[in-house]
Image 1 (cartoon, rainbow, N blue to C red):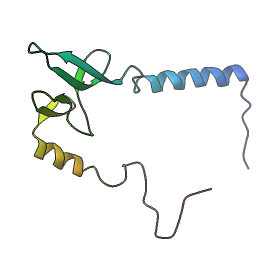
Image 2 (cartoon, rainbow, N blue to C red):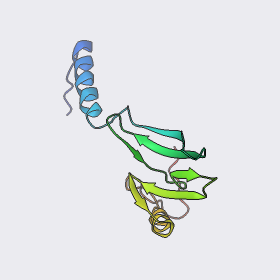
Image 3 (cartoon, rainbow, N blue to C red):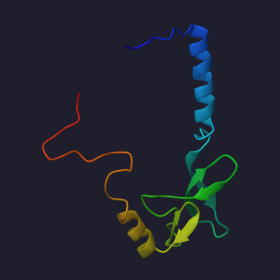
Length: 114
């Protein structure tokens, strides 16, 4: 036998506000991925991909080099602000294959559609 607890609308809103405040501690809405450019002293243009955390910014790009200067033929690969050479960066990116930790693989022939 289930017992039902009656909750008023005010109690529900208060509980929701507490839950949202708890979640906001872990999620930073200020984090943005930006594409910035700089004109170098020799007149060439350097383009960079940066993750802006609000209080700091680091070079980061999972799709290719984070720093590119086409005239100087310069490409630098960064992940979370750490510089890698192309071979190391490529190995790290190859290791990303598969499902994320929060997804479970479906057995063959089964779909999870409702």
